[in-house]
Every structure is written in structure tokens, then in C-alpha cells.
Amino acid sequence: METKFPIRRLFRVALYTSTAIGFITMGPLYLVVFSMGIINTDNIAFFRLIGLAVLGITFFVFLFWTVNIFLSYFISKNTFPSHAKKTTRYLWSYIICFTLFITIRTVVREFIVNPIISKEILEWKIKEFGLHSGSGGILPYTQGVFPYLIIIFMVFSINTVVLIIHGLILLLERKTIIESENTQLKIKNIEATNQKLKQQLHPHFLFNSLNVLKTLIRKQPDHAEAYLKRLSDFLRASISYDNANTVKFEDELKLSLDYLEMQKIRFGNAIQFEINIPEESKTGLLPIFSIQLLLENAIKHNAFTIESPLFIKVNCHNGWISVSNTVQPKKSDENSPGMGLSNLSERYKIISGDEIIVQNNGSDFSVSIKILTDENSDH
Image 1: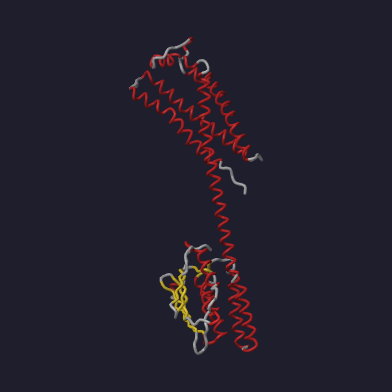
Image 2: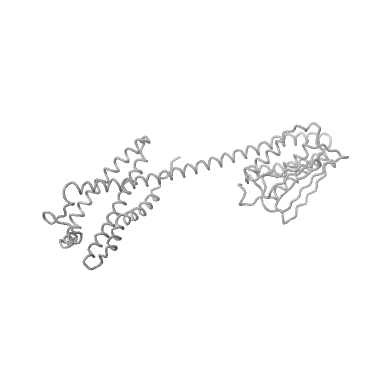
């Protein structure tokens, strides 16, 4: 994935660090002067020189930043190997910075500084600090190789600091991009997992429903039409919510009622249900097919007849929806893997990060789910 070069961020950092380095470098000289008590009209020129020095260092630091930013940008757009990119950038960085520093320093010294700084100021510097002038009134430490050693040290030091900060920013930028990409991959993986879990429900339910419909058409054709209408409404809702992780509470409740009515048509009075949901509680969100799956789970894992019906209750209290049923286990269901409940638990954890609550006291089995809000659901 092609990433955008953080040129604006680098220039912002360049502006801050250039100013900071300028004051940090020359600031101590102000403190020395104040501590020495040298405050009179004769040393105004000295303060002016220090001010110019701060501006000069700030300018050169920012210039070095600019060189390194554009070098990085240019090299990043070309197909160099990663190790060659670093070597090439560092080499050209020092060459260009040395060249610019010497060229600009020479021009400024000859055409700006020398005409402004008078001979009296230089003599004041000699007198004030007890220095002696050499031939031509030039200070001794401004002759020979010493100035060039200072230049080499200064350019090398400043550019090295700039390169270190510059490298750290690029490293942090790459880390941020990688973390963002990893987050996106995790989200896509979660969505794929959630979609896979949802798709496990449809084929099983549809297969059973068609078998029931076939039996009803043959034995109870009057009930088959009502069953088909409920099945049609149920499948229509299922398709419309296919890409959703969560649905409105009232929509999930309508879906579940259609499912229960289908089972009532199929089993008659062998299934009894009671739904106690206050109107004011029909807000929020639920995972798609959550209540329906719990209803299906109760019917699937329990034995029931007209003489011994299965009682199912759906209640809502303090932001939780609970589905409970009497426990009448099938003899052939003792080793059931419980895939439906596990499916719901996984989907709910993916969507909200929370757990469902399962309770079984031997006579009653219940599952409770906290109703979701926009803030704690991914839909």
C-alpha cells in the first residue's frame, strides 16, 4: 500500500526544532553576560551579535532540515534498495549541507556582516575580553585551520541531530501506518468471522423449514399456507439484514415472533410462549438472529408434547433481554455440541466485546443478552 510522505509534519517539526536549537545554542551566552554585569551602552553591539547568531543558527538548522526532507522525499519516490536509500541519503545530506553552509557563510560574511560590524566593535570585543589582535586587527582564532575545524564540527553536529530526529519521525510515521493497516486487517477478519458464523444458521434453518412445509402441504394444507406466509416474512427479513451485524431490538423481536408462530403452526399447543417486553424497552440493538437462535435452541434441545408442553418466556429487564424455557431434555440430545449457543456467544463477543449469561438450575434454562447501544456495537 502506497503511503503519503509526511512532508507537512516534518516541516512543522523543523520549524520548532530550528528555533529551539538556535536559542539553546546561544542562550547561555546571554546568561554569562548578565551574570558578569556587563550591561551598558557599550555592549549593545554584543547583544546584537548574539541575536544575529541565534537567527543564523536557526536559519541553518531549518536549511538542513529542508535539505533532508527533500532528499528523503526524492529518494522515497525512486526504486533504491532499502540499505542503499539510507547510505545515499546520508552521504548527499552531509555533502549538500557542508556546501551550502560554506557558500552562504562566505556570502553573508563578505557582503552583510563585514560592512555592518565596524572596526570599533571588533576592538571592543578585544578589549572587553582581554584578547589581542593579530596582523590587520583580526582575532587570532579566526586565522588558520581553526575556523574550518569549527565549521566542520558545527555542520556535522547540527546535521546529525537533524538526521536523528528526522529518522525518528519517519519511523513513528511508518509504525502508525503499520498499526493502522493491522487494525484494518483485524476489522476485516472480525467481519469475515462474523459473516461466516451468521451463514452457518441459514442452510440448517431453511432445510428444516422446507421439510416442515412439505409435511404440512401433505397432511395439513390449511396450516401450510399460514406457515408459508410466516416463512416468507422471515426469509425476507433475513435477506434484508444479511449484511448487518446488529438490528433494531423491535426488528429482531418481529423476526422472532414470526419464527415462533411458524413453530406453533408446526407443533400446536405442544409449545407455549409468553413475551413480556414493555414498549419503552423496545430500543437499542441486538445481534441479528440472537433471540431467534435462542428460541430455536430451546425447541431443538427439549422434548415436548401436548400433555407436557415446552414453556418459553422472553423478558426484558434493566437493559437485558432473557430467553428462558423449561428443561425437558431429549434422551438423544445428551451429547449435543451446542453449536447454536456457541455461535451466538462468539458473535456477541465480536460485536460488543461482552459475554452472554447462561444459567441452568436443572428445571429452567435461560440465556441473557445485554441490549446494545450505538456506542458499544459494531454495525
